[in-house]
Image 1 (cartoon, rainbow, N blue to C red):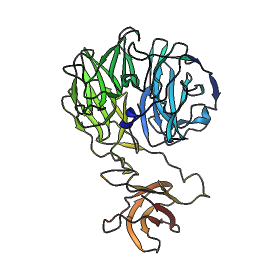
Image 2: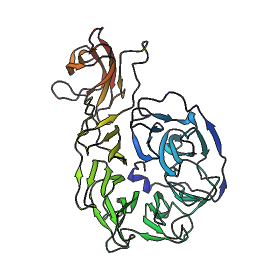
Image 3: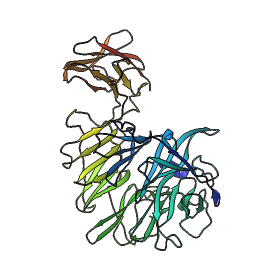
Image 4: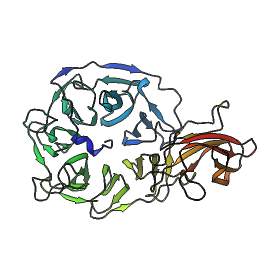
Length: 479
C-alpha cells in the first residue's frame, strides 16, 4: 500500500453515497509494441510477484517485467488505466486490479483524488475501467484491494470500506462494525488496508484492526486501547499474512493516531489477533514481504529483515549497483517482494533494486529519459531540475541532483559545476573511466568544494567527454 501522511487521519472527509451504478469502459493497445528497457517510474509504491512476472506501481503508472528487469511493459492512462499514480495493486488468479490517484486543485488547495479502478485479465492487453466510487473523488483514494470469493473489497480514505458483488458495477458501504457509515466522526470507518487469508477478512483503519470470519457480516475490533497486549497504534497502513509450516502470523504496520501512548511500530499476532507483539518501535513501516520463514519490512529508514519472526532485525546497508555503482539515494523503502530463487525486490523513493544473494550484490533499476536513441538531443540533462537540496533525493541529510550524460567513445569523463560568473564550484567527477555507447549519472549534493551548501540560483555544469566536445547543461538550485 502506498505511503500515507499521518496527518490525513485527522482531516475532515467527504462522505460517500449508498449503492450506485458504475460504467465499465474498455480500452486496448498493441501489446507487441517494443518493450521499454527501463521501468516506468522511480517512486515504487508497490512491488508484486505474480504469474511469473514482477509488477510495480509507481507515481507515473504501472510496470511489468517478465525477464527479471531487462525489459518492461509500462502502462499509463493512454493505455487504458486510470490517470497518474498507482495507489493499490491486487490479483485474483490471472486478473490484475489496480487503483490510481492524482492531485487536483479545489477551493481548499491541492488535494489528492481517486481516479478509479482498472482491471485486466490478459496481462494488460486490454483494460476495463471503473470510476471511483463515491460522491466525489476528492480525498477519496483507494489504498488497498482484497477479494473474498467473487466479492471485491476496497479501502478508501474518504469512502471508507466498500464492497462490490458484481465486478465493480456497483458498490456498497460496508463499515467494519454495525454502525452507520460515518468516516468524519468514526476513525474506524477510515479504511486503509485489507487482506483475506485462511477464510478470514482483515481490515486496517484509523481505528485499529478489524477481523471478520463470516465474510464481513460481523466484526471484531482490535485497538491499542481494548487489549492487554495490543497493537502499537491504531492507524493501520498495511497488513500481510505469513504462512510457514505450521505457523500463521498476521503482520501489521501500526502508526500512532491521537493517543499519546501509541507509537509507530510493527505489530504481529499468531493467535488471530487476541494478543499482539510489537517490534521496530519508532520506525514507520509501509509493507511486508516473506521468503519462507524470513520476514522483510519496508520502512522510512530502509529495509529490515528478521529470521526469527520479529524478535530481532537487521537493516540492509547502502544499496549500490554492482556493475554501474549506481546508488539508491534514499532511505525510504515503500515495498518489497520475493520471486523464485530467493530473489528479493525492493521498491523505494529512488528506484527499484533486486538482489539474488541476500544483499551482497544488487542491481538497481531507474527510470530516465534515454539519450542513446536520438542524435538530435543534447548530450546531457539534469534531473530533478529545479533542484532543492532540502527536498530532492534525500539521503543522509543531503539532497542530490543527477547530471545525466551519454558517452559515445570509451575513455575518461570529468564533470564540473560552475556558478553564474563561471567560477568553479565543485568537481563532481574527475577522470572516471566510462565505456562508450552508454549513458551515466554524475551526482551532486548541492555543495561547493568547501562543503558549503550553495546559494539559490542558476548553475552550469560541464561534462568533458572522450572524443567529442564538452557537453554543457544548466541546473536551477531553489529551496
